[in-house]
Image (cartoon, rainbow, N blue to C red):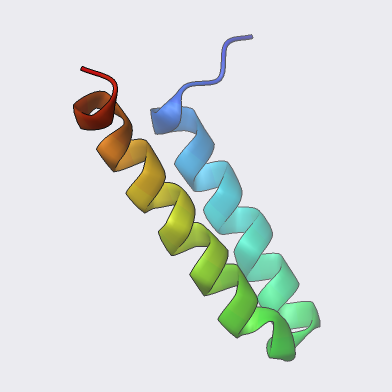
Length: 49
């Protein structure tokens, strides 16, 4: 099974949603880490040219 960005995003969103329901104080960290990862993956093709 290959994991690409299209299949990874729903998995990450599902795990993050479950963690937020279990431990609501994790919301800030989960959102921050998600935004950083999305930003890095979005900039990667432009930086590696």
